Amino acid sequence: MRAAALLLAVLALPAHAAWEWSAPLTVTSVHGVKIFPHLESANRQGVAVSGDTVGVVWEDNRSGTPQCYLAMKPAAAAAFQPEIPLSAGECYEPVMTALGAGRFVAAWEEAGKVHARVLPGGQALQLSKADAVQITLAAGNGTLYAAWAEQAGRFRRIVVAQLVLHGDALGVKTVIPVEAAMPADEQGWPALAVAGDGSVTVAWEDRRNRHTVPMVSHSRDGRRFAAPARLTDHKSGSAPGGLGAGTGAMRPTLTAWGERGVAAVWLDKRDFLSGYDVYAAFDTGSRRFGKNVRVQDNFGDSIAQWHARIVGDADGRLVALWDDARDGTPDVWLSDWDGEAFGDDVAVPGAAGPGEQSDPLATLDAAGSLHVVWLDRDVTNGTRIRYARAERK
Amino acid sequence: MNLIKMLLAASCLWAGAVLADPPKGYPFVGYDAGLAAARASGKPIFLYFGRYGCAWCDHTNKKTFSDVALKKLYTQNYELVYVDAESGKRLTLPSGERITEAELGVRLQAFATPLFVYLTPQGDKIVQIPGFKTVQDFRDYDRYVRGGHYKQKTLLEFLGSKS
Image (tube, rainbow over all chains, first blue to last red; front, side, top):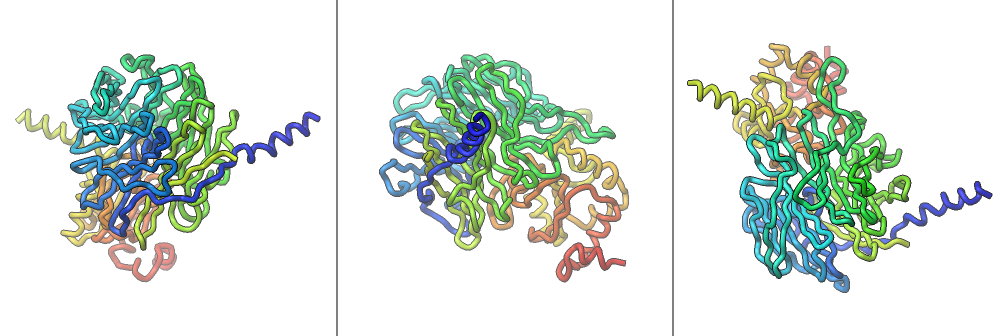
């Protein structure tokens, strides 16, 4: 009887994890073989859903130099509205988060500083005084945070800012370095999550151990941060003969998850002969991340994974996405967390098959629908940014 | 004089921080500078795709790139470019696309470091070779590239036929 129940549970898993996808839409209105859109950003935070409006931010060179753009689509609309330029000068790695009721905050790097703006409407505000890059945003419990990598002496370090809103105007309430001491080596690519209890977690790439290690810290109030801890449970250390300093791991992403939890994924080269793998770790509310879990299944084991992102929600849904070329060309893959393990890897329809589909961004909306954005690279016709929405069957 | 020495030392430290782990004593430069230099000089590009803290890169640097004659061969005949596999530093591909150094690894489908890529002076890829290689290996690759054999043969065919 127990065996039968177990079998039924196993059989039910794929059905539970299945997603029903909308037909993909093209986000960008301008394409061409010499126009190169990019979705890269700290925490891969380039899509958000506010009320019933989806927003997507990206960078492309249609004007001759890299510029950042936002496109929005109300749920009832059949297509994305024409894009809005965010920046005046060269712009890189834009991100956005939802404020509710169709409003967003977008942030980006421009002229060596980081900026933010409320949309629609709003004016751009320079957030950093010093040179800064790789900004990301997170909101929760009525508080809006930004984090970026800011020049501090020879290296960059991670700072976390609390932002305030007065109508469409943004202000900076506090800017706090995660560590007061000057950085001993480079830090970058921060990820932020505001958990259900209002505490803020920040993860980043850190080279203080003479190789790249994802580190993490948290704060109850956004003003005092705990001493950084390693997100990875793989130790630093030289290979025999005193060679090197450790395997590489990069581009951590975070999401709030469940009642008080935070989940992380990153690219990890602990198996250094098969490229980066996607690894995950969980903080269920203790503000300590536990044992690392490899995300992709065995079919993706011998091939490099890229552009990993994790998205979750307060109801405990958790989905990891990335791209890899296990079927010959890059496709976008996802895996659902079932409470105990990540499920089988599933190719995202419309973001898989012939051609190159990569660089996924994603978010879960209030109803649990999954919104995914990716690059569809075509050397003949130019690269397009594509979008699809999925609901659980 | 002391100030000049201090500034030079600081600039060396800074270069080390930016370039991570290229072999010591070689005039490696960033991607954009190397591509510009190659277009001007007509020399092919030797691109070292390494990773900060990479043990096999360290091994290759100590065991292979320490060879004085190899250093002379590559310094004189190639524009030397170092790319950090995990860096967010920006570079511009020959197509005009701006990507990060880490993203170049995606485009090269890099699965291990070090990865050595030979490029024409225009930035077109000739061949890429992953992992630890010996002094003799790099001499063979040099003959393959500068001898123009890549126009007729794959590297494996060339290596199989070499005397």
